[in-house]
Length: 94
Image (cartoon, rainbow, N blue to C red):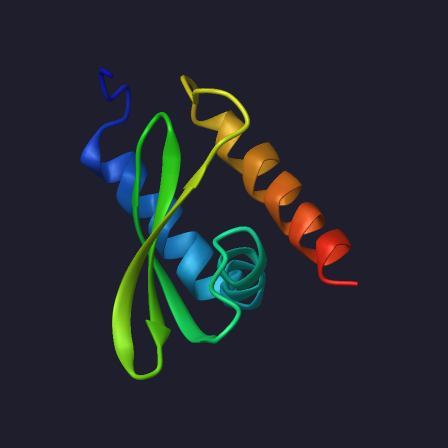
């Protein structure tokens, strides 16, 4: 799949998510990424099909890919997809 995003766009999204939404990312990885024992996460990559995190599980790094609900072709879609994933993770954890 062709990657429609430049490195600066990816870096901006990664920086924003890691700086401002770490708690949401941890919830997403624990629930949607099926890593309930994750203690920390970092969003490390984005592609049109998925968000890619590195999770700390039992002191070891684990790559976790969480697919989008549909392929992402425009930057604005990241916001709605991360919001959807955070909402799903919160709903499923209760």
